[in-house]
Image 1 (cartoon, helix red, strand yellow):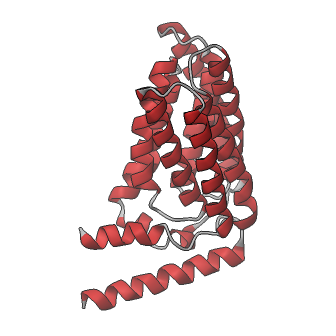
Image 2 (image 1 turned 90 degrees about the vertical axis):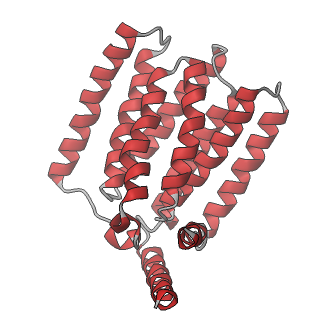
Length: 251
């Protein structure tokens, strides 16, 4: 257990500097949002969830597998927030993240070890499958949530859910093309939570959180190991050195 906590601490180190800057910028925005409104259990929970959520996506950006723990904790907060706003598909979105990203990362030793060395790219066939899956999920989820719940924004909720679910699967399969979906997801979630805020169903913190996610996704195309070859080799060397250190400590 001690080695596991050391591993988690290690996974929070060695990120591109821009990731740390973005986290503290996000934290400042969320603190200002929190103190600028009535403080309730829901707003506090939203603050905790958004803070952990930003750390989670920044960890993915940095090709660090601590996102498993951070993702589970933030998902619990976002599920409650989504239920309060009646954005029911956002609940399923979080459950999908837990199922496709967080739990597999937590239980798969192979996924956790030097993930930067296992990044892949789409083929033409992969593009077709991913785009078709997104469209099918959108149509089915939009119809289902509109027909069986009182979600006031079923089709807006559905497009966010469809894009995010597909992105989660693509991420778990280690394709860097996930960031095309994450950018689309960030835009869709900004629309969803802005409409929810205007209709009095959510706090502004969720819209701000989606904005930070979008900035993170754009950042990924420049400094993230998913796209920056120099950064990828740096992270691979860092992880290899850490693995060698662990081997010496256990021998």
